[in-house]
Image (cartoon, rainbow, N blue to C red; front, top):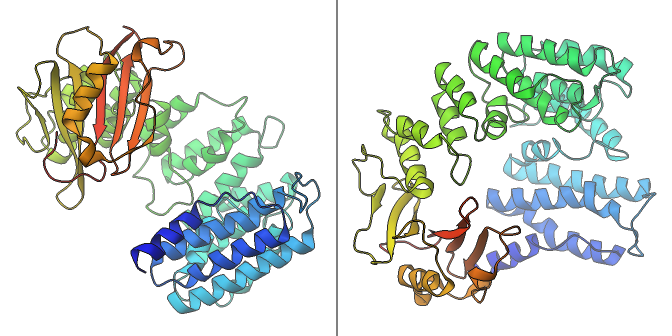
Length: 446
């Protein structure tokens, strides 16, 4: 695939799936489907995601007249899905990776009718003769997600509860997810009772609490405080979460739910989960009261790959150079860069794939940047010849006229790749930070 063909594909990927006639949908499918046989796995998988989303989610939202559809033709939907399944099997026979990729998409697609019945029939056909490269546990789990345990709570719940102890972590996770999706305060067991059961089972054998919360989070009335529920699991569980899970684990959710919580981070550190504590401490792209002291402690860690994350966050958002920094390629200041500014250069990534971030603060505190000064400093860091033309944002905006109540960040994107943010401190009301991500820019700059 040459550059022109690759650009054609990525433009097709960005097509808005808002077609309103059979002909438009047929045309889209005929252009995207050949990429399922592309020699590059990444291209195949992107094409599969687009086709799966179109067939099982988007097309049914539109009538051929263009009006929202209230009754979608089951016959039409069934034919589309059958067509897609045939292509998936053909591509899998050629490359050996397409059925697993399709099962991955089915975690979030096809659980309504008429797709669920057709998919379950298709999946059951593999149980006696599993295709090469396909996990029977992922087939079983996908069947669970598509209603194979029963169509009512009374029918499905006993089977799902039993599956929480299945030998397969993937199957357990899928069962927990459906329980979280279907339970409420009136089911037996109730959502509150299930939270207690899931917590106890997760402590003994991790792998189900995250998938359970993945669906319960959208309807979790009459349930315990989720942060305390998860932190208790984290502190008492016997081992780590499985590597192969159908949905995110509690570690993922905790670093978002506890964003900005100093107490939660201390509990994570006390229970030996320093990487989760680091992810939580660096989740907020800005200043959190009291977090600087925690980051300074984290930056003392003897593991350089761990400590550098704290160093970078301190420089980028707290205007602080950690005293332990011993590698100037990771985080450094640029003294003398411009008399109007204090500047930090932060390297993200490793020797194989990296980019630099340049952060510019006004030299005087708490002075505010005006538009003229801000763009002079941006031009000095990244001349137009390096950053290319502006493709997002408006440099004509006067910083002093931007409403404090509506916008404290202005974003810009340039053709060569760099991303620029001009930021105002909400508590001080002054524009006091420029963040330049050198996406697409290599070599020394700034």
